[in-house]
Image (tube, rainbow, N blue to C red; front, side, top):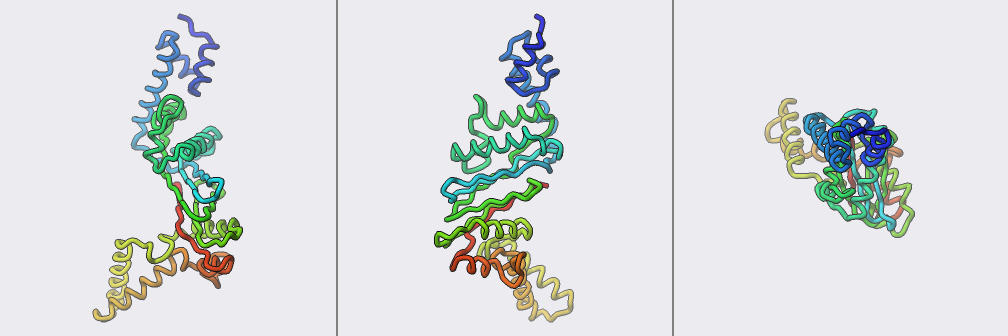
Length: 276
């Protein structure tokens, strides 16, 4: 049967696929729209499989905070090139996935990928998008922060985002302070809120590095442990958020800055996502 321009356009509106891909699919399906849609999906699967080993170092980070300000969600949708990452459709898709996750209460990337999306799953929709765009697409990160107050921050390039959870706010307006701390996290990339949040393997590694450095400097063996612990304390100061010097005023630590905004206010948790 003859495939008309109207048929091709209708399939394009249904799937978002390119005109030539739609024409080829309709021709192969002998004008059957359902079969044509399946053919386009299979094409997407083939593109996805052929690009499975590609790296996705571009993309967008998006955030959502609940109306009560107590729950924040952050997601990164990644792709292969900056050209695709800056495409409006790609950004809209990232936000659609984020809003779907919030609406359905997804607690992980795995839960999000399994959610229904336009009569298929999110995973299958991503395969479709891969076929349409021609690049590997992934939900690379998905995190949730629950706190007394959650403040989001997206860096200007759209590839770095932060959620910071604050506690003991005493009802204060924490938007500006939260943004300051989120920007600190974006810039300084702390490993934890405080030393209690540093995992044991990191502590062990830092102690061993400290000992090796002291040993290389010729320090006596009986002094190595003490020297290493001193270096570990320096590591805590430089790499845990509350102990870091505030980048806007290095006469204060982040802990001191927050306490000055509202007595006793502190950070309960944070998530930082960076693409590339």
